[in-house]
Image (cartoon, rainbow, N blue to C red; front, side, top):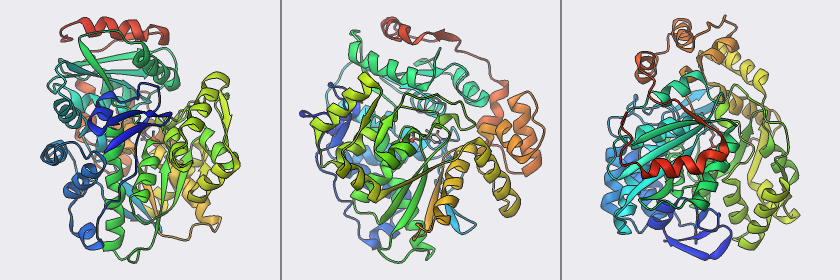
Length: 492
Ligand SMILES: *Cc1c(COP(=O)(O)O)cnc(C)c1O
């Protein structure tokens, strides 16, 4: 399968090359030349287990990787790493269904892709005959960083470097990252917000001159991140079919707590591959740049950045929207390049009416601020005994409004993206319980109140020594990466 850049059809790469590079040389994102059909009969969809289903989807999207390598990546990447037997349970809650994507090793949905990505990169590296190490650069709004570190720690021929916004992640998210062990891992705080870190990483890609390593990315700009996420939409739909919630071929709607637009774009790709997806509902927190875009066609990042209780969605430049613009304009790369130029130079763009209309035909949207999300957490806990984290609660609240609007005609799945224990202080506040100063005390207190088990890896964090203390300015990122890339080992 050939991949093209969203900004120019001249930038072609086989899927292995696209996974290795992360970002296309012209700054665009890789997209498949044609989105492949899933080629799954209903019978196959209902009979394959999640491993086989994921491997099937990956083989379609990354077709020039050896099938055996893909199957091994899924098997070895997921086996023994999840706290639940069903990797992603679909749980009925108050008339909707919650797709729990956070039972992996770092308690966030990023694990679904990042358990596999190191193996996909290794397979890609081999397929392309690359000899040097791959250095995986990652900007994180909180969860990608730890999931990438856990996935890549001590993986052969790879190194991973994570940049997180200083003060922009939860205490537990930070502890997860700065205690990470491994000879090939590096964690650094950036004085700025997620957008600064993400822009810095893109800038390093454009200007990096080191010779000892090849750069790649673990952010959802990498198609190797998106492809595994497509698979759990198929799995969730199969769950609804098996439970008799949807009839054969009938659509289901998906409500997605959104930041960088990767998760929801995976749902769009699933739909284009043939899954009966009805409306994709994009849920934003107070940083509602996407809600405004989906309503008006104007994307304007010139606005106040809000720190919220759902930090992994505190993003003003949603990278993967670029891929949607490409797909929904039937691959109009010159248009996408022009819009991205306007965004870089003026901070905003407006899409043509016809393009907006097409997007609005498939997407709905809504926003929920912290007050609304906390209200949802408390109500659902009190009436259903079901606990959801602040990100999921944003989506739940938007789902409620969507249902109340009368537009929701199909069974709905709300994607749940993190364990409540990653955000214990916010959870306690939402439940109206006094919040202790320390995040780990808050975790124990939340356990005491709800009885829901604390993920073992989170409970163990408190005892771990801090191994990473670097803090730099965004403008220092390139020099930092080049200096680190020259060092043979990063062992402490
Ligand atoms: C990353 C993340 C999101 C946002 O996902 P995108 O793919 O960036 O839109 C939502 N919730 C949690 C908990 C996350 O970690």
